[in-house]
Image 1: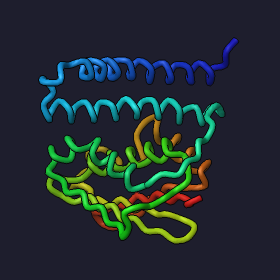
Image 2: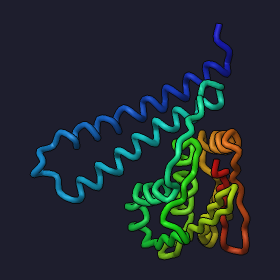
Image 3: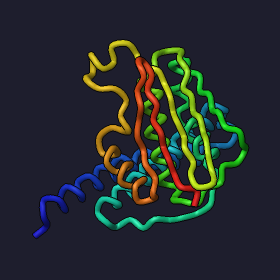
Length: 211
């Protein structure tokens, strides 16, 4: 008989699969629209929806880390591209709250050799929380620094007045299922995630080895 833990794992994966199905259906419908009917808004919706589909797939993969079934996939990629793609995925939420996203980096290419999907999900979680908890009209600052061995990314945002009083919490690495998975996944990459808080600002650091 299956253990309770195995049953819970299957239950969570089934939920993720069920969430994935309608998102995939929307993507297929948008792909099959006549080209003349695809205005800029629909193209943007398609791009964001495809990103959401990839996010669910990545979450399913990353959850398998906890069960020991995930194999790390190392490859070289430009970290800046990943961060910019996650910003684009959150574009509608950023516009809705009139937020300014300020990406600070002294290079056009930040080459890194690690698991792209884990890194992508880590930044999606951190940036989603920054957007969610930032007051209307504020700035989210993303600062990237590097040395010969490591890359550090700091995502800083203000916390809205009363956030902790009303919700009982401030920014978290992620919510629900993703929280433990991200920490565990980054540790397998010899990376880490942590935060510092100063008055009404919070900064989440994601640190990764370059090789």
